[in-house]
Amino acid sequence: MFVQGPVPGFRLFLVVLVSAAFIVADARFDRLSQVRSTIATGLAPVYWLGNAPYQFADWASGLFVSKDELQQENEDLRARLLILERRALKYAALAAENNELRRLMNSAEVLDDRVIVAEVVGVSPDPYSHEVVINKGLRDGVTPGQAILDAHGLMGQVVQASQLTSRVLLLSDSSHAVPVEVVRNGLRAILLGTGNPDALDLVHVPDTADIREGDLLVSSGLGGRFPRGYPVAEVSRISKEPGEPFVSIQATPKAELNQSRLVLVVFPPARPEVSDAGDPTGEGE
Image (cartoon, rainbow, N blue to C red; front, side, top):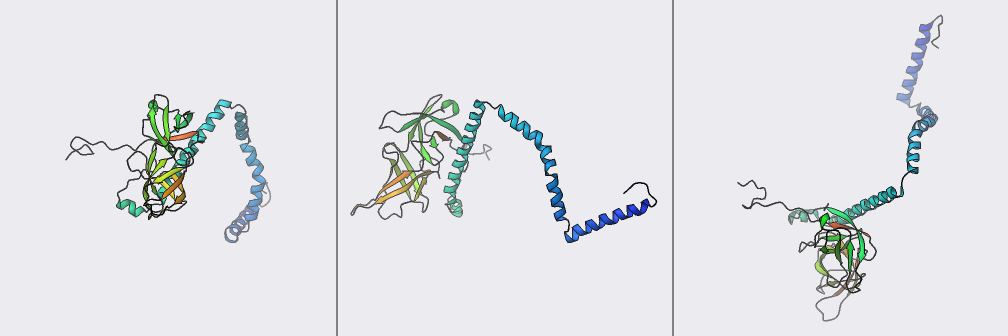
């Protein structure tokens, strides 16, 4: 169109006029949307060819990934999933509480407790002792009394720690007790192990208490041993004996005590240092 001719100015004017007509038709009447869609479809192979070298390089690098690298990546992903599931459990329990009531109680809930991932490497051979061994110890900062979780709820607590490993007492052990509360109404009680990994006993609950089958029991935080708000068990059976002041309540653990291989060791939140003068800031008056 722009070759030498007798009237090049007229041709330029014609091109400008046609371009302006297309601009107005597109801006005011949306007449060119189908044209743009067709052009974009035609350019798809161009985009694919432009991205082909990257895709080929990514595909080629995947052919030379070692088995150890794949196993490490799998372990990292499983650890991240476990941490995210733990956070979801904590958020679900805290969502059941009234925010205004928590402010009145001056409750400073910590939603993201510091944790490390550990692996169960051993099980106690004693049938009357429900204990497991994890591959984290004193060198990792683990100390007796720390809570242990799996992806579903509270599993137990560390009772002995060495440099490389730690022994964990499970909830189901007959010597284990956890202070819990009912999420629905805040009723507090003590959950005891029975020696059965599928059953726990909720004790000292009056026969007039408002508790139902299916109620979720979470750690109450009383005593300072277990963090507050983690799922512990679900009420499975309630039986009342005539004339007895307390009801017999059985609960099912939320954690998979006999199946979980990866667990979380929960570290208590750091407390502010207090100076000799009693000023937590250390600045004095």
